[in-house]
Image (cartoon, rainbow, N blue to C red; front, side):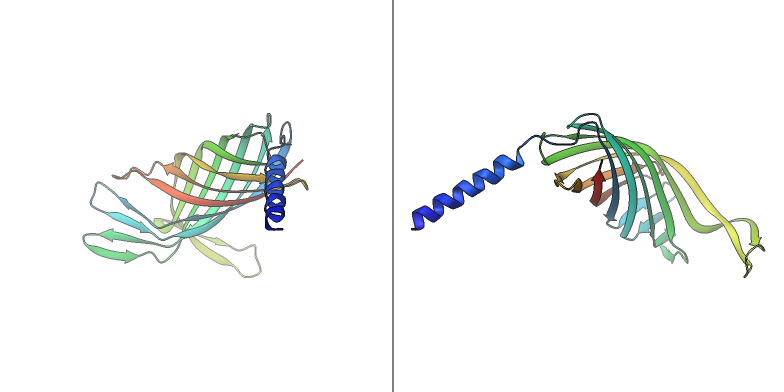
Length: 210
């Protein structure tokens, strides 16, 4: 009896593997996705002796792409995140009163290694990073009188930098046209820091293909 159960279990495992290795269904189709990402804390050092300690953060993103075939897709991604940070200057730690806002607008390519619903993938991307420090740049104060409760705000220091990176991970396509991806990657934002300004990011992606 044990031998029969073992044989049955072995056959089921082999059948599952064969089904998983069946041809994929991605070629010449569009897909849309929602991304949740997590970045661990990061320190950036600068040549003037100052440094910034960025706290860890959770962000989100929206993406869409077109699969040229079952292996290769062209991608677009927009992401958004906010995190607190501390400035280190002359041996003192200065907590920022506001959060730093960061967005990325990126174009990229993804290569799915296996022509099957379950596949590893590698991706590359490049685009622009927009950063709003939340700190006043000494400019004018602007007031909006058009709303029910007038509000005023100061202009803040912002910058736009070239950004690029890549990722590796695993993807699974369900028969219901839903897919899920999990991976880890890096993006490099050119902040003119002494140490390489690369940021590790862990991503979970949920999407639909059409």
